[in-house]
Image (tube, rainbow, N blue to C red; front, top):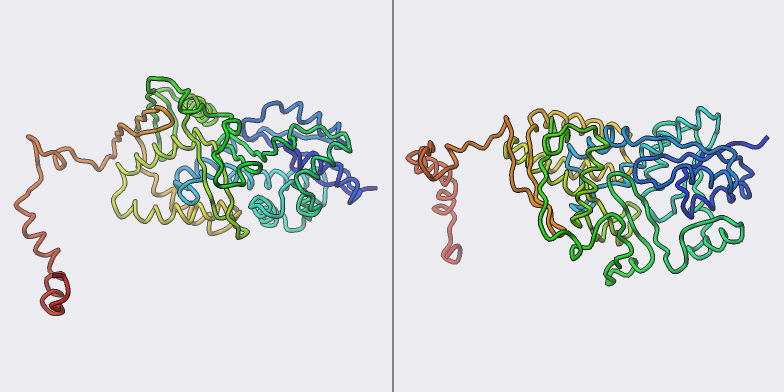
Length: 402
């Protein structure tokens, strides 16, 4: 009796070809697992396609709420953005997919899991390492890493085996998407001088075609988690989806980034992240209001480390858990409302308020009601400048500081 393998299945080119390839190469019975973490157009069509191509069983899991609550929102609280550009949408989805692969393999008594990642990308690391952390006894197979076919050869293999794929030689984009963002690569994007053509964008309007008037949105946070829009309480998935839709209408969330992959190469990546762009900006603006300077500066360092851990596939590690505990503690007073203005591809924070605000009007104002004691400033300046004056007196040379 043939062994079983659980394949993470998106319905795209590589995973569709992988079903037939795993049968031919390893004589395995393939069970596909399609994880819905948002923006999957037709789950039933994907399931039926897997069965048509040769899977013995096709499983679909709705994991949108888990994805947002257990992966996206912790990253949002951390302000995790890789290289100050990438909101980590795909990177956040991979550990959840790995977790569900492990759970499904145990349930189906499969000794192997598989995925469609290539040998040049980051996702192979994220899934392999996550599976190893959760179930080191499982073997991981990555067909696209083994078969060494070019994009054109993979398409030809699909055509030869009557495997329907939407991708073509003239439109060879590789796309991954979920509620937090959409990643687009390959094709003309591999030339870093080429401007991304409009057909790569699906969620965001071109700024030239956005509304002539701005839109305003008030986002309510509780302990660093977005909970309401314009005063209306919303569940996590619905809130992210609503921000996503509004941001896309105003052309917000396009990112064109040359990033440093974990495997050591630079890669040109184009992203659409409408909801992530707005919610991250709003969250940071609220933190600026309620956290002290030292907290903000240290948290920025933690945010960079947290982003690296996510990007590098280290979600299921003690280090990530330690940083998460610190981040959670910083969010105790990150409660309030942020007002953003959406216009022609730009998101601008134009207002913020919180019951825990450290902004004191009476100290900041230059008008009546000013409570700042300016008479204390000379003494402060005298003490603050003491080491500067001491060094200048003892060490100054004629050629310096002239």
